[in-house]
Structures are given as structure tokens and as C-alpha cells.
Image (cartoon, rainbow, N blue to C red):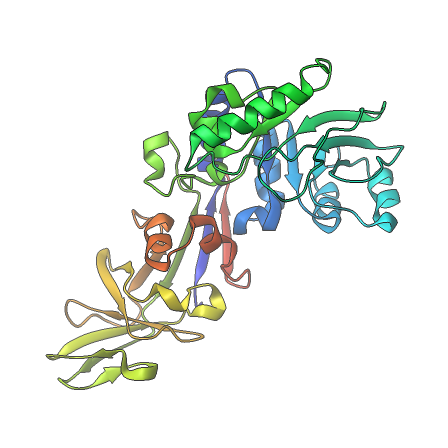
Length: 336
């Protein structure tokens, strides 16, 4: 086994309950796009729905149809654009779709999307809803970084939609659901917080969230470098003294990015620094002493937060999890 991903659905269920509590009566719609940010869309969707989420949200028709085979009665919202040829398939599968430009297709449930400041998809002006419109939505651009602008977006959204009180409105993402009470409206589309990842790049525990995913491997080889010897491409790490290093059989092809050099992982329960250049299928860690081959390595979990790796890589936490190679051995724990 090169590595193993463990998904704790008990933690996910507790995150669902935390979000439902924060939403204070608004519906929770679970965003499970990109294979649930690398956590496994089908398992996550089932657990979230069972715990009280009332809808699951994806981006593509392909994602929606794969889920439909597993959650046959659930409401599924396709948030990305559909080709004309895909509309009939969405209709036959009982899907709900987001429409953000052009005409509104007939015969299926539609959510109209208004662009209030994200500057991507969305109508500039909301068209008059037809009879098959079941929701009105917008997308907040800065709920995690600039709440003042998020509030401006909400004001624009309310101004455009207040005249349709019978239609459910949804705008909040995870950050807004946790920190902007006025954004919760009728429903919130939450992704990152479901997985116990902080929308703010901080410790998830600050918002009562529990990380769901763990990623573990082992030391495949241990060797001692003498002063002046190096490990990896480009000789980015050169030993200044006799130094024990361990090789972990996980690399950038598995989702351990090249820019994670310098991040910390746990080796036999101790924090160790990744050194040298990350290879396609391995990376090196500096060890405190000689350790036996086969010692456990925790890349994510057991107190090692995705947010730490994201800060090292200069990215966001869910880019890290969504790029973990699905070919790693996967285990799902479903206890509550």
C-alpha cells in the first residue's frame, strides 16, 4: 500500500449538524462537486442527506447522473451550464438546473442565477420567472475575505428578488453561513465546511468543524546522508551534518504537490519536515533519528491540518483535497 485515504462520515455528519444549527432554520444544500472535494461524492451525499441536508449540488450533468443512481429520491441541483443536448437527460432524471443566461428551458425545475458581483456566470438583470422556476440564486465572491462587499451583493440580490416572495432564495456559501447571518435566506449551498475544512484558512475547530479526511502512508526507505550529500532533483536539500531521511512513496502525481517542500507531516507520531524536491511518486522527510522502514506517516490528519499544507503551497485547503489521487486505497468510516 503506497497510501490510504480515510473518510470519517461520522465527522461529516457532525459538521452537517453544526451547519444546520448555524443556519437557524434555513435549508442546507450540500455541495459535492469534484467528487465531494476529493472525499467521495456518493458516500458524502448519502450521509449529508441522511443527517438533514435537503439537496445536493454538483456542477456537471455527469456528476448528477452518477449521484442519481445512488440517491434516487434526492433533490440534485446542477449548477454548471448544460448543453442543449443535455437538457432532455436532465429532465428525464428529475434534476434541477441553474440557468444563468438566455432562455429558460421548459419541463424541468430551474433556478435563475443573478450576477451581483462575482463577475462570472449569471444574468445581469433577472428575467421574469416562468412557472417552472423554483429558486433564485446568486454567488458571493468575498464572504471569506470581505464581508462588506458580500453585504453589497446581498443588497443587490434582495432588491432584485424581493418581489418574488414565493420563490426560495439562496446565496450563502460556507463562509457566509458561518459568519453572515443575513445571507442565510431560505437555503445555503455549503461545500468546504461540510468536510471540516475552514472557509477562512484557519483552524476548523474555531468554527466548530471537524476534519473528515485523513491521508496516511509509510516510510518506504530510510537512509543517512553525510555532510555535503543531497536528496532529490536539483539538490535542493544538502545535508550539513549526518542526517537521517525517510522516503515516503507519495508524490505530485498522487496529489502531494511540488510546492509542499517544507511542510510538516507526522512520522511515527512526530512532526517532520518534507525536504528536497517532491518527485512524481515520492518525497523525502528529515528524521530526528534512524527509524525503521514501514513506520507510519500521516500526511493529513491526527492534528496535521490541510490548512497548514495550503499555506505552505500558497493555495486554498480544498485545492489540496480535491487533487489527491483517487487511486489511493480508500477506507470509509460511517459511525456517527
